[in-house]
Length: 335
Image 1 (tube, helix red, strand yellow):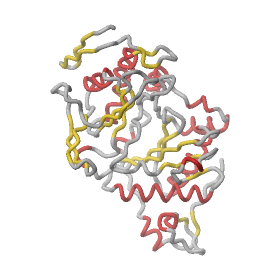
Image 2 (cartoon, rainbow, N blue to C red):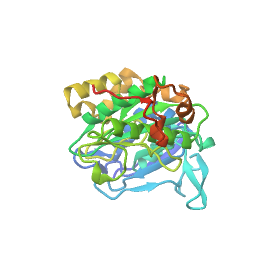
Image 3 (cartoon, one colour):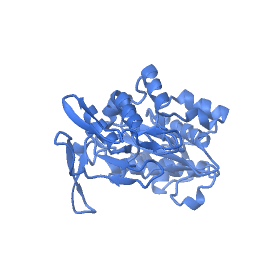
Image 4 (cartoon, rainbow, N blue to C red):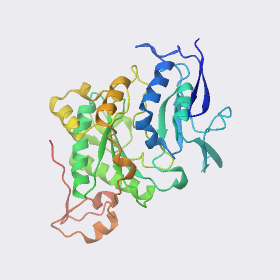
């Protein structure tokens, strides 16, 4: 096995088993994983910085048994930053890694942490998410093409409320839609809002959408997973590798690309492997950069329910099952 040592920003890192194949179908090695994360670092680090990071490690490659790791390992270098966050379930602090710099990112890649799952909140205020996410998960034989249609239905609702939204591939089967907030809020608010929208879509498109987590009812439908908006859950980071047969990446895309995939009904248009994601970043920049600073506020669903006049659009009924027959709701249209 090939070992090496590098110095990054004054940090010494021992790299081990560089020739170990982690993606057997294509011969993608640990060296390739490290190289990918080093090259994509300018894009991914701003989205990881300051956030408690859960890692999904694959020491025996994508065909082997993975494990999730929340606590920073005892053998970590002393320069790896951590954040102590209280775990109510474990009744103790969990010391999460903060991937704030290139050296830490390379160190994690050397541990075969293929998938990086950050919190939606910054570690210094774990109760305040800076973004809201909708994970669109297709139940076979549905695929990402159907997710594209649901994504546009979601965007219609966001547009109504003056909210900008940004799509990315999950790097696996589906599509994920993010809404940057960067304003005071809580998971109670984001989760209720996300659940309301998922129920609304299910109501308007019962043949295409499901908001219930039961896998048995997802066949050929898109599950709108609203539950990721939770302090105790994480979603795969933008630009993270995924542990699929090939080294696919959770890649930001434009709404034009989502529309093209939908029109051509070609799921392959939204599949990006590591080399292509790097090339896209070099050409297009970080399409998810607005997530870092764009400030947006969620509408107050309770106030909407109490004050919306009959002629206006409202969705709050879906949040509390309190709609009256006279009120109209957002009705999403097929594209």
